[in-house]
Image: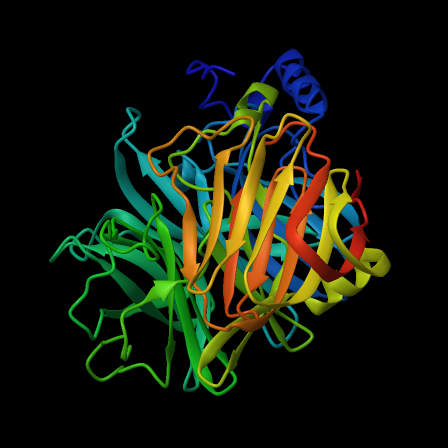
Length: 482
């Protein structure tokens, strides 16, 4: 689908019914790539997960959405809820950018539940000059009541003495008895990224406190998007989506258009406004299509969901008028000072069925499958169709490599290379989720993940370079009710 500039900046309530229907018809015509169990937009472009919340047994999942066209345009929020990650309720458009301080889009944000049960949504309002140049970003609060986002108000204005136009993605972080709104920014002093702290002094009242910068001699890019800071397993887990931080000389790290990176901290160096990292931040996921993850707590477990997409890329699904999806939820822990990411236990329990233990080197599939196995030695796995169009996952002595260079169709961007990570363990658990046009690989005993899209028309089998014992499960299709 070609970009229609005349309507890309329309709010959803400004689009013609016939244009909405045309987009929906195109989405319905996608018989190859539309996911069966991942959250995807009804049409248009999905990107960052937002406002994640577990309340009264329900997982509330907002996501950023540009209507109708598969391009970054007028950002709204959409909302679904689920108890079991099989049955979802579509709660529709949750934020339409209709106040002055979000006049050019409702950007990313989060949800925070107070001790009395009240929930506040915090997000960024974007303001541009009308020609695509960003002027400023403000932080907005809204009430989440009766599953609606209401009563929007600006709680942190843009401070042009501290930041360039880039200051976004707020989240509430509790630290040593105080509540802070944290967000990422590009600092005016050095044009590099930083983690901004505003102390909460009263309801809707925040005052600037500090900007946290790196402790090591590395800047981590010119903008820190979607920062998350969580206290878990007696450590602080910090990760963010870095703009402008690349490393063309490293085979493993920083190979995307933007990169999600993390560190584990004993504590922040608050006295010196430093992050207090002991080693340079490293990749959170080694696949092609992983960005803007956000965490939330559910039954005392730290869960993350990310955008299963990438910036500056157009996908083969453009012709069907939709772009991107969300990852499955992951459960995050720190074990022996290492980050462990596993499929969220409640998700896994509810979506898998008809599990079988098999020993084989090839099996047939249709759209979606889950399997796990214990790997010892080398292995090559291929997902392919009858035309031998395929992707390949290779485990050798030193590396794990994901190669999608031989698929039917390819994304359009400047970073289409193989993706690889170091093999940490010769003997390891591997777990894989496949769904129509996505693969999520958990390997190195859950210390390494790969998240990527792939585009193979009518793929129908998986082959292995040798016979292997697998636990194979079907994955229940999502049921989305209006």
